[in-house]
Amino acid sequence: MKCVSAINEINWDPIFNGEQYNLDEKCEYFQSSIKNCINEHIPSHTVTYSDRDKPWITPLTKHLINLRWNAYRAKNFSVYNHLKYKVKNEIQNSKLIWAHKNQTNAKNIWKTVNQVLGKNSSNSMVRFYNSFNNSIMAGNSINDHFASIFTNTSTYDVDVLDDKWCPTTSSYDSW
Image (cartoon, rainbow, N blue to C red; front, side, top):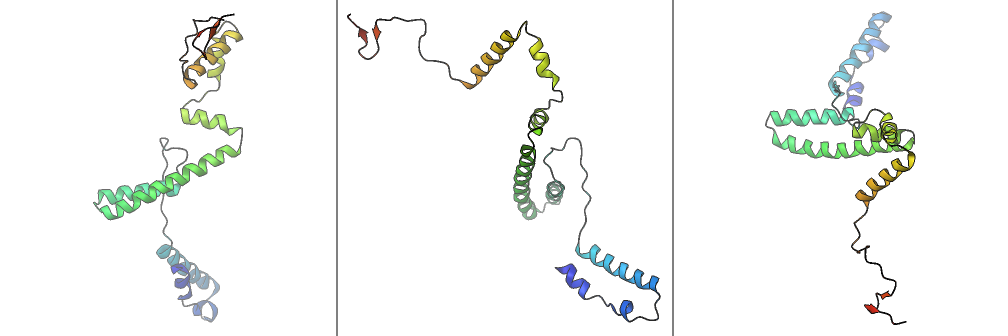
């Protein structure tokens, strides 16, 4: 809103009523007036990315992180604490937006998983599959591995099987 009020305060008479000015001078006056308002009231910052940045970092997130770091170095801890919470909220929002953007396209799901895990080749699964003699051995190995991760081990002793044992009476049935 400050920029709008600054534009309203500009003396526009040299453009509209200034008959002593030619068209080039009027254009130059208009351009310099608008440029001054923009430079004074609309800040611009350059944000540079590195290859180590996470894929969900936005320019605003990066800018807030840099401001927070500058406040810390200047020992301005009240500004630092304020920016700390702003950075935390912005990171959460950036991650949500990034995840939603990647979930909307089904083709990007595995690309995203590989990117997060740091895997850049889809041939790793093919190489793993080809390391077995046949597809049954590969499937059994994969299933065994998933079962060891996602299931609890059984507490029942599977070696003791007796057809006459009745678990409700804890005794043998008499036939």
